Amino acid sequence: MRRTRYISRARHSADAETLAKLARRLAESGSRIEDRLWERRLAELINDRLTRGFADAIEAALDDLARTNARAYDDLADLAESSAESATIDIDGKPHDALLLAIPVLAWSRYKLPTTTLSSTLVDNVAVQITGHLAARGTRLAVADYLYSIDQLPESLGEVHDAAHVLFEAAAQGKRMKVDPKSLREPVSMLADTRYLLAALIAPQGQALYHWQETGVDPDAKQGAITTFCEQTGNALQPLMTGCRYRVLAPNAFHAALRDADRQLREFSVEAAVSYLKLAYDLKPGELQATVAAFEDKRVEEARIGISKASDDDAVIEGVVWPLLGDDEDKAQEEIEAALRTQGITRITTHAQRFPLEYCDDCGAPMFPNPAGHAVHAEPPEEADEQPTAPLH
Ligand SMILES: [Zn+2]
Image (cartoon, rainbow, N blue to C red; front, side, top):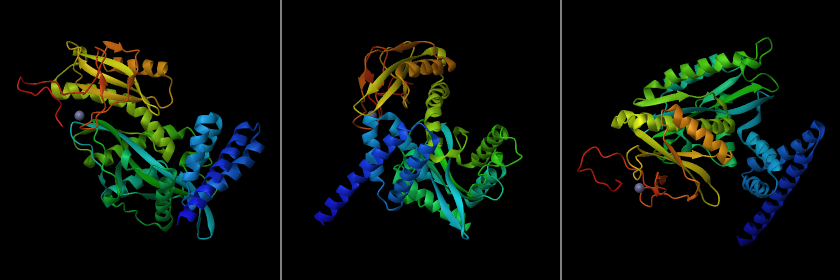
């Protein structure tokens, strides 16, 4: 037993080293011809490891490159993500390109945001929107029958690969893909968050996947198609989104869609917090102030925004986490201030000091900066005198 594990770990690290080595050479390459060769060798190795369930070697190579070679890291991450979310599959003896799509939905609510099984009517309705507005002629399609929270989506490269292949199989065979809700994690509850639909799109190899890629179609038809798709999919989701304000974002390949949604969620969360305080407590943006500070530990770096009453420099009544997502702090600072001003909050305090990445021991909620320079627990504004001052858990 121990021997097997030892061997597999040794092979594992040899794999990771080979992957990192090839990625470094790819990053140094100065021509498309050389690129293609390294890419092919990397793709073969990555696909093999993903298929055999050894995605850990890829993650280990990425960890190594993240510390040592940013460009090689990007190259390997691109290839690994692409291999996890797409595949060449055989249908009736002919090769096909298959892609895992994610359709993000930004949503906020005073109540719990939904994560739920979709009725077969709703699955069909989403499929009709994809066929009508996105998919090229001759493509095959399957939609997973679940509205996921981000915590419930496949996370590691291996999980994405496995989830993608289940959907590819359903699309290839024209079957429905049933998600077992019991297999999913319990989502973390947030005022504003993303929800996702997943789908697979399959085209005969080398042919158009999206209809705006078809010969004779204006490539700019994409913008109009996406807008209509988002509107109509939004209407289709209405029955699930009672009590929510929400917006369907442009669908894309799994990893690209998640990145875009993470980015857009930041400003949406500021908008949600300000709208919520108006709706629930009748506090207008002019009666509020915001405090911005950087929070960090060894791995994570994020800005947190504490929202307080303009008259109170201690209590934070609502907070927003603004992950940096690779942006530098100055750029983030500008964007945060712009987002706050757009929502009508003009009184903004920025602390230069950095705060440790702290969460509440009881409920796990992030701590937010107050104007006085402390990180505190956000507490709803007191509506009556008998309201307790300690946070409710
Ligand atoms: Zn707490």
